[in-house]
Length: 368
View 1 (cartoon, rainbow, N blue to C red):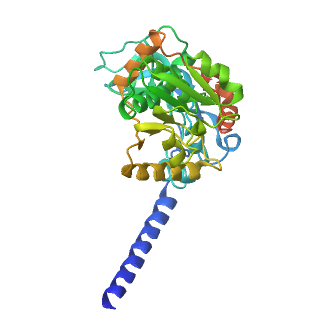
View 2: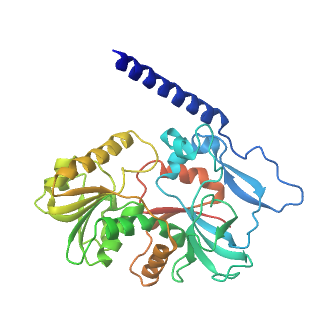
View 3: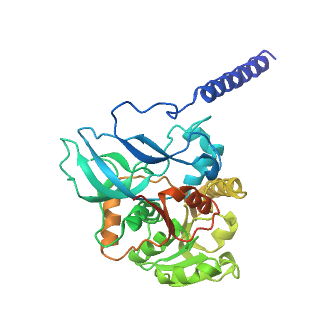
């Protein structure tokens, strides 16, 4: 009885401490929205959001202080920014508050995948010079200028693509690392990509083909031609056919939707095959998000007791792999499927379109 009381009161104490921590973290979380621009500082335009909410309610085009690069940074004049699937979730908050700020967003300028022109360099920078065209990943990219570390996730832009296309290339890191490092795709293998017409999916089709795989893409009727045009050997219209009930077996399933059960997907995997759990279907938070997340976790756990493996992975944003994507793009092996662009003044509209969860290819925002 004594131990039961100790455990009971210990558990209660832990819950009270966690609750107190959460309350403190929530009410002390803030951002720099109230800070004034120092006198004499240069200004620039940037998209900001100081509170969580819908794009129309929280996104604002404002004048902010222009950044100044330190000795190890480059100043980039941003020309385009592409949106990722999680960008909508950043605005809405939800469970993303645990990462982006409990009460208010910590980083008030959204966007991360950019392309642009080097405006100035720090005195220790040797890799870049003013005038160089670059692309990469840097939080707070929806602004006229950003500072990026020379050693950070930034490389020279492919010469054969537009700034808008280049800004969409970092999304392909998810496809490259998921297929190469987690799926371990090899020439001659059969690979199925569920969600082949989306931002990551369109890159996954092309990268799997470059690895020498026989690729089957799953998408809706309206996206069949897009997926064929980027190189898929076979295309399945999910509105008419369920890939888990077919006769084909696959070495790798690259699953960006996660809308089928563990047993259904395992059925169409070859013995020892791998299902790469690369997404949860659509962007932002929607009615199926939590269900799909739970399905991914369950599948990963269950596969520990099976020959077929269901594996999640974390993306490593690094300069080396961005360079690989640049080379693939310059070689014509990866062509960004950019389907829609918006000016900076219509950023809210871009986010609203993203949150529909049915974006074809990539969308980008141009900054003039």
